[in-house]
Amino acid sequence: MALYRDQQLKIYNSLTGQKEVFKPINEGHVGMYVCGPTVYSNVHLGNCRTFMSFDMIFRYLKHLEYKVRYVRNITDAGHLEDDDAGEGEDKIAKKARLEQIEPMEVVQRYTVDFHNILQKFNLLPPSIEPTATGHIIEQIEIIKEILEKGFAYETNGSVYFDVLTFNKSHEYGKLSGRKLEDMISNTRELTAQDEKRNPQDFALWKKAEPQHIMRWPSPWGDGFPGWHLECTAMSTKYLGETFDIHGGGMDLKFPHHECEIAQSEASTGQSPVRYWLHANMLTMNGKKMSKSTGNNILPNEIFSGENDQLSKPFSPAVVRFFMMQAHYTSILDLSDEALLASEKGYQRLMDAIGLMDSLVTGKTSDLNIQDWRKRCYDAMNDDFNSPVLIAVLFEGVKYINQLREGKASLTEEDLNVLKKTMNDFVFDILGLESQAQDSAISEKLSGVVSLLIQMRNEARASKDFATSDKIRDELSAMGIQLMDGKEGTTFSIS
RNA sequence: GGCAUCGUGGCCGAGUGGCUAGGCACAGCUCUGCAAAAGCUUGUACAGCGGUUCGAAUCCGCUCGAUGCCUCCA
Image (cartoon, rainbow, N blue to C red; front, side):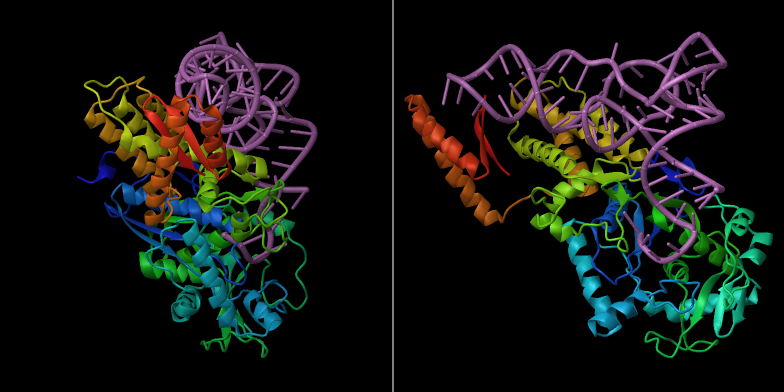
């Protein structure tokens, strides 16, 4: 029997503002769509946080033995920097012009970067990773539908979604908690040459100016799709007209996701998504990381330590652990101090896990492992509460250390539950990686260190503390720490 | 200006009506040749003011502060 039947997962749904019991449309199957990046520059750490959060969610759903189809798109069609002006240049085209390369070279370069970085952070690839430019036909079809239903109009080769008309029969703004009347009263005057009937209207199709490189033929002439449309087209194509989970960054809630809802409801008559999930922002110096403002840090700058914000390099796993220590719906602020604290905690966790295989079993158990295991699931079932999970996992760390010191005892059965649970949650679900070195090298290294430990013990036995301390201190300087315990000396490499 | 979210001990960060979150740092003890590691113990924090309640960090109101969205952004 599948694990999900034993677990009651609750998810905070942005649409209703409440935690709801998760029930997929088709039992045992989950369709999940997450808005991916626009590939016109290097992915920064803030972007990574969102994808990492949904990776953790993907992993947990899979762990619960759901069959998950996870679709995460690549936006490879540039969108106008200023939608209203009509004169704006799209970001990919701009980058291509600045670097004197083809737009698709820009796309390729940053798609590769995106994949490389996510791999370093140990993200699983999605089931499908569709591109916007690969779905122009699907987007055009949706525009036709919306036009037919009377929720859009064509002006001068462009097609706009008619928000006011839509709002008469539907509720525009229900996701972001906005009221159309408020939005109207708050907007400035239309610019004189604007093609839109109302400022709230948004583009489904934009006519391409002659100099615009990325262009496709359509019933309305050469142009390119509006920036909300691709997600509607691709999510519908691969997940159906209504699917289970739609995720993305908080900054996409309005207008992007609001427009997606409008587009789907206008074309199919159905609300597209059951559960809307929004991951919160990563900040630095108290401000949102953002490509356009420059307040961001690139993952490679963290891994190398070459940046102004941090005192030292941090490994991808430590950064991931740091992020998992905050709930995905909370704002998280990046700082050197916080990363240093996480690094130590991460190390303690990994050291304990490394000890698991050497633990001995007893006849009785004086730790309630089943209850502990249940609390791990409870944490994740409560809207993927990874920080609470980590708190419970640190109880597991305490258990392991107590067992190692002989201060507690577990039966073989319980010990196996402890090991499996730690491995499941730390590696499979949180997606942390032990920084295992090349196994051939690490095997030899561990032989060498064992030899040194033996020599040190001999020195200690003969009270030659000068020698024993020298071994200990010099290894420590190399990042190899010796730990004396009841059962002998072990070591950890940092 | 409008809409929304948030303000927790030295730092990070959970928690939403009564019961220890957790991590890092700090202190004491145990262990140790000395350390480190680990274990044990201690910290009475919830922006301010007022209200509801037997009881509020948790609910309500106001004030102050921060952030996000309202234009491309994860």
